[in-house]
Length: 375
Image 1 (spheres, rainbow, N blue to C red):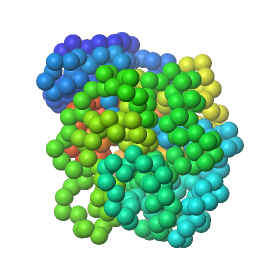
Image 2: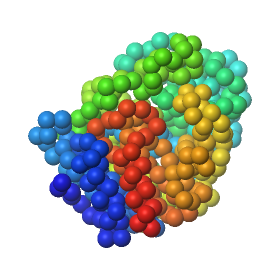
Image 3: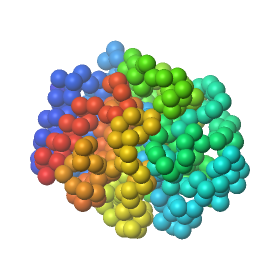
Image 4: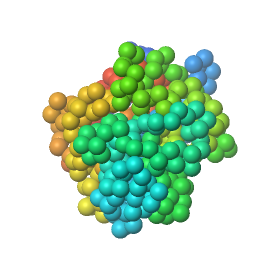
């Protein structure tokens, strides 16, 4: 297996695990990157951009990372909070007055970040194309009533979370979330990550290979929160390869990047707020990402979950590593991001061959364990 890039000898286990992903677990094209104490120790890529294996996955290849994008939206909110522009515990309606309809006057910005706002899906049926109309989706979210009492439980806001956070960012800054992210995070951190991808870089985007199954198992009760969440807005893997999807801003699901760019954007959170010569946010602002907001069985995912400010939190029955202060999330099909504030470790895996399910898979988990084994 031809592997490209750099791997510190201390992290040889990660390189071996990366090779195993191709030779044993069927990876097509992928990248893995790790920083320790704010410096890159792993930056590897290999494989192919397309199923026919006629185009190589290159150093600057990008791919849609699905819900790994959510951590970029959360980071925007955390940066604004750290600057005093947003109070995460304030009612969302303080910034978005139209949101105070149908019993949502007291829904907090933090409820958006912790998937506990009761707005995991839409009452009205929308098409795939409707997702590209920001005002349409935000108006629908502002008008509808929560599906459960906000703050009482989490219910994974698979697509809606990005619009909810993004509208707060827009109201506060006058910029779309994608533009704010580009100006204030991706640019300063040197992260080649896009929320709203220009067609001038489409030639760098790898084909996604759909998993052949829906995001959630079949057989769910039609009126369940989980079924309603994934029926509107719809989630269709093939849409990710269309121009409309790529150019739109869907901050919960359509970010384009690779492992290196994910790690470049997120390393500051693992490293006391600073990375690559830039102080992105204060030490306290970085720690805020992992402040527990809610825990219990998630109404959409159907598994015990713990959420901080936009990040899943490690738990005794679902440990992501040996340390206490670990935040993570992943994207449909397998992409991952993990920040460990105790070890000052940041790790990401991004690939184009999607595996079934929304809770991660062996490939990313094995790489993470190899990273900890290397420590």
